[in-house]
Length: 248
Image (cartoon, rainbow, N blue to C red; front, side, top):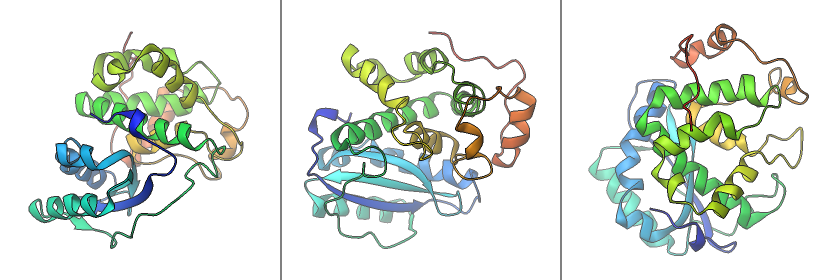
């Protein structure tokens, strides 16, 4: 399990773009994410990276692993061996990790941002493995109901995190408090909020461009489940009419 306290602002930053199948948009993303889980859970990976985060890549059919490390050569070797053994595909040749300010467009608090990115990814991996449909429903309704109408985030998510994420439950109370502060952090509207990163991971997309994004810049009426289902239909899932957030 990743230890957030190993992260520093000077760790080198790199990316891997991986695809596991030709299943197409969204299905290919989730297939690729499942394919790399053994890598992300391996001792070799957790020994060589200090943190990492996940986003969709390609044509919504692949995974981008963004990571920090103090041992770039060993990290590349671990991933190369995994890719070869599992017949995965690099979408682009991995570059050489270097010094980067990941937070420059997100408020400038570098170490805080790196810890949040790593924490949301661990929680996201947990809840998607436990119940992918519930995870997707949680984040679709979050965007179009909770965040759209400026409701509190914690009551919406806490039950899912408590019931489905060992990583979340391993955090100290102060670390949990910080995570909730970070998830709701939005330092520079109309730039996307920090929650965007986790939405992108769980749903394989976000509505962070016009014409959708400007509707989030001021409080709006929450959409109904049927209205949200029309928006997410192309993503290959629907929210059951009786769906409710998991209770804490």
